[in-house]
Image: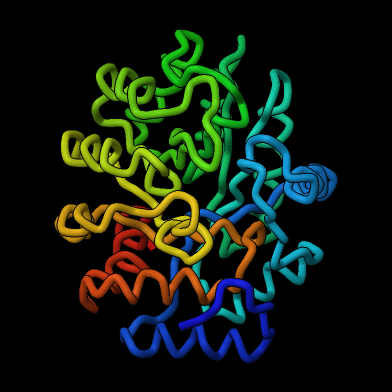
Length: 301
């Protein structure tokens, strides 16, 4: 088992990730939760982690892959990640449209990145969400914790409806980990789903720490999925452990669990997330579905 405090080992780690995929007979991995954003924005995010900002839960959080953009994309390719995302998000009004323009350009020059966009409850949100969809966005990112907004805000209602109609998945951080936000938890997003039951939400971090509540939403709404980002790892198990009694429910939802990593903003090697999933002992079919097949089917890869 990998110690989550072990430093990344470059080509050695890439070989380890490849061995994982090869054992499962996979052509590679699909990671639905990786972060690429304008460099000055990403550096501010890293500084927040470095200073143990309150939304990190006060945890010591060294960034394992603090590298330039080109190095980070090259490393994912070395790992055999066939497709990944540019999870970016605004924390105030007036940012989302600008971030979407950057993400569209990043997708054009990075063909293995799924064109990502974001949104915020503000006047004009429906317009720029529509523009992003028409420009080819394949996945959206919403961050309820950092944005400190109610996902059921009336300003977002037409945007959610547009995304539901378009069938475009939304990776949403709406759980209360690693620290609660003003509108985190299952209740606000349940109100969104009551209005838009066909909305393809991918709940980031398995909804940590309200794991069982978000499993319940996935059991209730057939278009709700969960990503594995940081869940089951040694790091997360130390402060927000997943209830082992709920693992049969995770197994039963095996067609709606997707690999996510939080790369590059993780405090352990990339391979550790994979080993954390493997040691759940839910079977190779489950692992194949989670690490490749489910996302490949969802995004038509």
